[in-house]
Image (cartoon, rainbow, N blue to C red; front, side, top):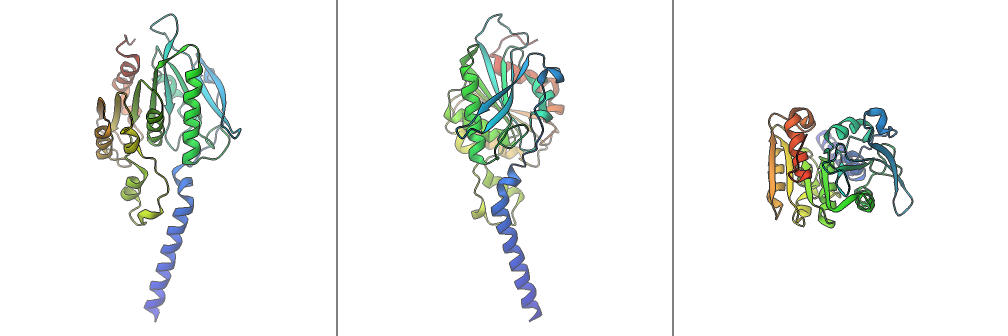
Length: 279
């Protein structure tokens, strides 16, 4: 009888864990750290300004728009880069990285996802995609931006956001850093205790990449344990057009900026500037 009670208690405990994982998976996937969006000029981005976008329901999104630094051409239209960050980041935390990695001859736009940073609303898969579509529309409306040369960048969670944009809009190129294949594969990799049917999120880079027709550039750390390198290889293989995988030796999931260094930054610039001179 005691053994039966123990087994029943374990079963009920497991059922409770499964239920909580099903209910709170979006909060786990989208922790939504809050922070006010700094003035880009206060963090050394003198070419930047704070912007505000609105979703269909009126939710306000906060962001940065950075005009080109040392543009290769003295007159617009310029290429532009849309930047989508990882799930534990926001503009306040990655502002210096965005500033340093902005291609010198391209504009850059980054927005906080709903519920993140200085943006209103709540982070869900649908709301993040809607925010990404709004960001694309905003940069495409800029008269100084060449609509035929809009590039999209996404890191970690942002890789699924960026591939969503590239699958649904005309973009000149897609850059992914530390991408995973999809939410189900991440669940298999890190949450093997739970049944697969509870995974409601898609975040499907593989499905998106099959719809992308632009060149794809993927950076991946060789020591990434969160999104293993094998996932990055599968993402590259899913692209129907030209795709390149750049390995960052020894890098895990969150130190690619540091370990990739100048070589990473210059390869990104070369991709976005289409072979233009990089200073």
